[in-house]
Length: 184
Image 1: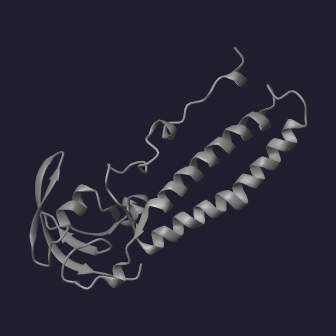
Image 2 (image 1 turned 60 degrees about the horizontal axis):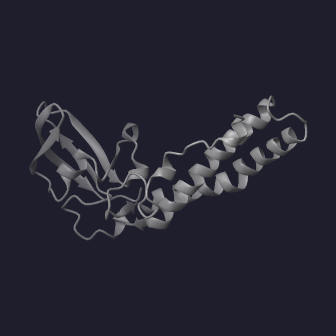
Image 3 (image 1 turned 90 degrees about the vertical axis):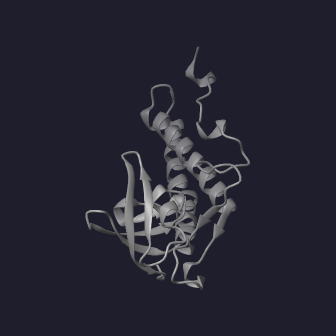
């Protein structure tokens, strides 16, 4: 059978349409204002820059004749599917996003969404993390999802509190050293 008549499966299409990917049912998609802007910028770039370039290449390649052996056409179509899939994902995420501005947090003495927290583990190793939305999480930059084990352990704690972090290696006590709510 020709590949033209087979449907490629998308993992995203197998998920229910009413729940954004990666979120448990009934969970809100919290995001910082900066994270919301980054998602919008990525969607805009895909729609206005990336996709038109790829469409141009595919159109040119389609005009060259035999599409079955045309690498530009085949890989261009594949890239278009990837772009379209990412655009659908971003659109769903933006539609379901609940923007929470950490600057508006009134209780600066307690850890909530958007807080930058410095803590020390049992060996007195200090780490600083910022609690952000799922789509913003980047451990290398110290940004952890509000649904991560460390964020769940830190939530509602105050400076001087000792909380228990549950990890696959077991439980670990961590001390809260500092809490900040900065602009970004």
